[in-house]
Length: 581
Image 1 (tube, rainbow, N blue to C red):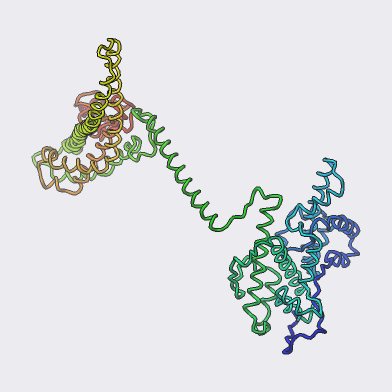
Image 2 (cartoon, rainbow, N blue to C red):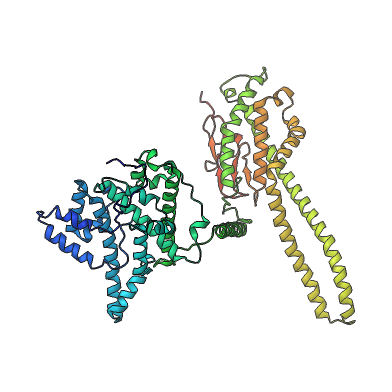
């Protein structure tokens, strides 16, 4: 890039003013491809595009570096011959080829818009004059009159001899800076120049579109240096041009130049929002104040939370209606649902039961014979199962007792309130009631309390079960402590064995799991065969050996409810088959 000559003296009047007239970049590129076989077709397509040039103000848009991957199939196929030559120029880096491609994209958009409006007007029978008027009003920027556009261009290019007047009307720093460029024919300068004209035009259109409010006075520009410009905006031609200049070029106006550049960027973004709010897609976009936006966002979040809460409550209610007293439908939100308890029950036998079994082995009585049968340790098997069975019986009794207490307490509280209300109601009705009521009314009054009492009992029972289950995690710990203190010494007389960590872990898990089983509605059940019963392979598996008759139960089978379907298989030790002599 050619250097910048910064004279120490003020700029003389003989310096040529910066030209802002739009050039036909497409025409310039086409001249370089006159010998191309597709030139005639391409030029014809270019002429067709020019028919829509008046469909709004011609603007090249933001000037950025050409990238082939951003070219769409629609852009390639809309005017294929013309697009092919322009893309070839961009690949070969022909002068102003990037600007020519940007101009092509702009003309394509305007040609599509003009075609749609023309077809619409022809179908509705409107005259050509009305079509032109609607075309001008179809875009937010195009609503500006030709006079306003000329005024904006005159402001963008300060004419000679009126320097003071122009300086008061608009900021001239960036235009003056580009006016000092020696090599104005370079492609880099041309792209930066067109980018500045586009940004300045957006600034002026935004200001003229909202004359009652100066929008840019109510916003803060936080750009004082190149590093403050967002990364996704650094591909702009003007940014690259300014970034390549040395700081001394700015003549002590470094921050002012970049603040002006930031103002233009902001104006361009605001204008884009205004187009979306007032253009054809105004039903999709809307512009609101920041405070109002935050208020709406907070209100939306509040309403969303309320809707989620109501949805959760409704789902919980529906789930309760389905799962209440129906074990065949599982509540997936319940971490202690039957299927999950079945998994925990199986895991208890694999882990804690095995550890407790190993802990009890060394404590066998020395007097016992150690034959083949003793290798299976039937006494230990019976002892471990008795702990499980006793835990389940204990939890079943305690859970029933707890439910009864809860129901009595709730009914007692409701009874106190209902007595007070009944007394007040009775005293009021006594004044209006006939001294000799009919017998039919007495029968009806006797039936109503019984129905009310039945509904009350059902409600109390349902909520008592819900309360009991909600507190089951805490109450399970309490019941475990009670069992260890009251029941375990009768099962394990040796205190040393009772204090073994492996035995303690097994007993704790047994009580907690049995407690959760009893919290189900209806409660789950353990199936325990007796000695001498025939082997039921549907409920139990063999432990150690095979046989037809049960010697002892090693691990009870878990049922969904009494006489219900199987949740987890158990294990039994069958009787040893008699050996043939």
